[in-house]
Length: 257
Image 1: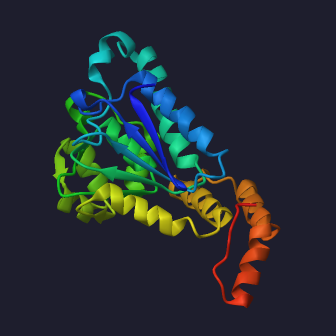
Image 2 (image 1 turned 180 degrees about the horizontal axis):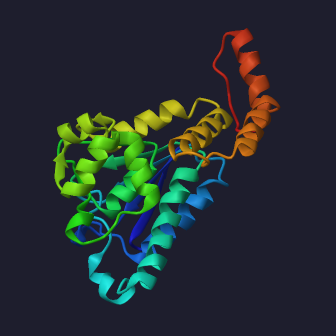
């Protein structure tokens, strides 16, 4: 769809929200399309990392509220809408490859849904982060609240959700909403992912699965599935390659198998 662009740059893919005239507000159709895009990346071995960003000056002002009169009019429609939002953020979080949100300008509401689901959040000095749900009488979704809590701690999570305030880059970083600040956030994200791409994909996938499950609260981590990932890495050709490369004092060439 025209509202989402995909650019491949070596082993890194940029997923770009493409609605600059409305500061990259996300429609219901876009939530669903983003979920499908990230699910497809799981099957593509050539993809080692993903940068999620917005075109123009802003990451995203969040959900396209202009749609709400017709698609989120009551609790039944709201529930269906949240299924789509959670499906999108869940697909990002579940992707066994590192994902960096490259944040410039506004990252608000639903934009935070997207950013919180990523592994890392890099911002530039224009980054402005906030969740205005308390100004719209919306209760933020459970999964995104859990992700916010894991990143910021309970006191800052309460501050963000109760106040509906917006936080500039430096304060957002001090609260745990941003991981790094850069002048060129897109280039920094790509450089970071290029560095990760030389490491073993199975190691990263296993670590991501366990850390995601553990951070989402009691019972969220499937221990059997986690052990399966550990076992698969132990039996992999990449593990053999890692041992050979170590013994031969060279850089390993991992293939994710």
